[in-house]
Image 1 (cartoon, rainbow, N blue to C red):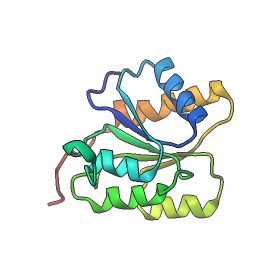
Image 2: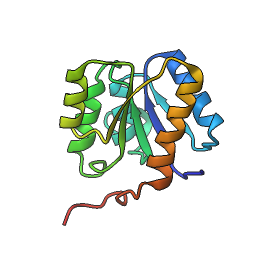
Image 3: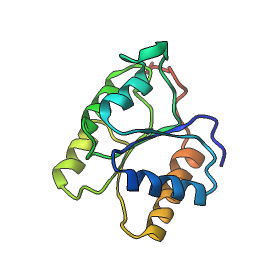
Image 4: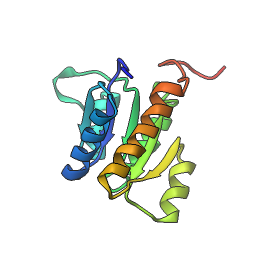
Length: 148
C-alpha cells in the first residue's frame, strides 16, 4: 500500500495522533500523515483558505476526522461544499458514541463513521480495514471531477 498522496488526520488529541501514526505504520502505510489539530488548520491545509505563506490547496488521499476537535463538523461541511473536495473520502474516526453525531455526520456527507477502539491492537486492526477499503479497494472520483 503506497498511496502517493498524504492522509489528513484532523485530531487534537496527541495520544490519538500517535496511536493513528503507529497503526498506519504497523499496516505498512507509507503515505505521509498530515496532522491538523483543529478545524481551522485542517481547512487551511486542505483548501488553502487563509493560509500564510501562499500555500495552495492540497489533495489528500482521504481525511480521518475526529468530531471532538474544534470545528470538526464544520470541516466536513466545507469539504462537501467545495467543488474540488466534494468527493474526497472523509472517514469519521472518533470516540463519540452519540447517535446524533452519527446521524449528523452522514447528513453532512461523511463516507463512513468508525468509533476508535481503546485497545491498541484493536485500533491497529481498525486502521488496517479503513486503509484497505478507502486506499486500496475504493475507486475514487478523480480530483477536480464534477458531476455530469
